[in-house]
Image (cartoon, rainbow, N blue to C red; front, side):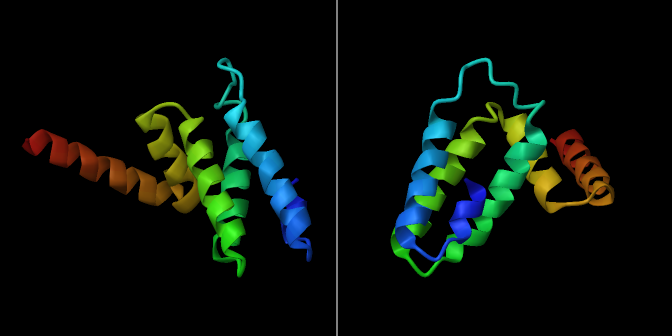
Length: 107
């Protein structure tokens, strides 16, 4: 489905987005987000590319799917680590964690 997002036809792209949205809104409660984390990260980063699509309908659908994808990660801790994995490298993660701990100790 993700490859269909690069199609020339808006109808095909919207159909692909509707299918992706259906998948992420109907995940079973026991969906193992840890096991499929790399798939979720790949899907998320692919969707980010399509946020600047020239078609506003596609932008709106991508935004909605992106929110559902984040919610399927379940907890704030998982969401935080997911964003860190997608956007940052490990050395930055360790610096960020040390900084968060220092701020927590000050309070």
